[in-house]
Image 1 (cartoon, protein in one colour):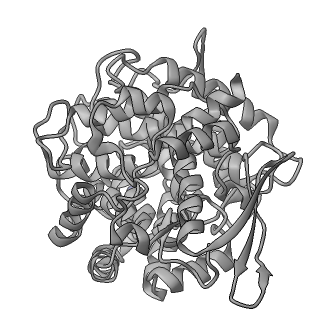
Image 2 (tube, rainbow, N blue to C red):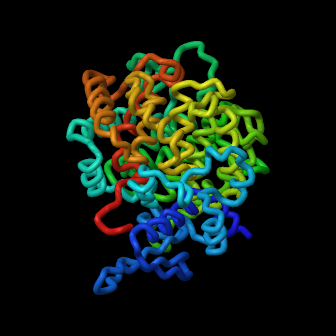
Image 3 (cartoon, rainbow, N blue to C red):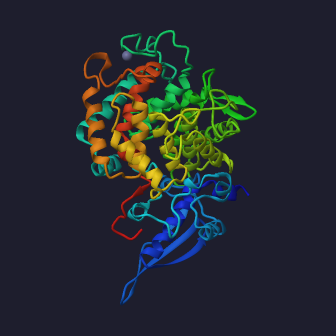
Length: 484
Ligand SMILES: [Zn+2]
């Protein structure tokens, strides 16, 4: 049942399988579907007028703990009975989602009803971490719009972050503490009682290093990353529900720390070898997060409390990261999360609020990104319009929280306005990075979140934004040269 549970959970996987089947019909390809030890085997052949030419075989395999990092890009194992059921239903949504989500608007691509936009793009099974290598940075950076300057900005940001790592391996949003000792301006705002645990600051900084391909084993920051991960392990509070990284703060600490641990686990796997200790922490942390979900499907500041779109965002992304690293989650976690997101949607348009259906720009960018991860495909008119609107409005240039999520959404859909969006945001970030003195390499913008998280938060978020080209492979793209 555990495996089936995983499969049911994977609306994006079912989406992948259906996209493949859809393309099969479109491209007049003949395919043989079969099971292998590693999952669903799809063998293709191009039926031309004169001959049948075999294509590459594609295996959709579960990203188990003994797989190579490249396989993190692949969807999890397919249960053929689930797939065939879905073909019959002509829906991209997994069984429990189809029943749980009342709103047909969330049913994306339907066979027979597909729009041109959906035909234009294909599901790549992306979202994985395998481009996080020097070669990957070059290749995907060139392809999706990094520049020499933006890559230098990433390196400068990481250097600043490394210089602000504390003795115990942690980072703090409060720059009055050592090693900064207040030499940087704009730390966490004084007298602000918003919970900002060092588990969140540490996780965020680690994500910036991992996003550039720097792990405990690879690159110039091995010790920095090792010490950061060690800090997270040492601060994991043991509870009957698993490991808790709130650290007296909030579920922000939990989500961000788990995301960093999961990415580190995924990036340090080598065939049958993986860090069993990291696996242990990722598994127990996942358990805590899953149990902490409120019945509305959201996550709040404290476990089990009703939540909001931003906190829910970190938990969803951390759980998806954990699953890609081979950790199982509960079968209904993502369905319920999606229900929460749809409950804060204002009107028929895909515009979303924070806790209620009162749409805001940032929460809309977050929700759209999350829905893509939860299986929303291109081709649904209202959803596509919302993504178009995101692109049309352009980056805010000061609210890095909004811009980070919007960039992810546009990257994953390979939106037609990507170049203009990216040029504007990328060059703005390059221009606004501090270049002199102790602050060199950091950023700070005055806004709602920048004031709370200060320069550590803003710098990490800007670095993650400039890593978008290779940090996650896009989930959808124009069809590549071969028919899949
Ligand atoms: Zn400083």
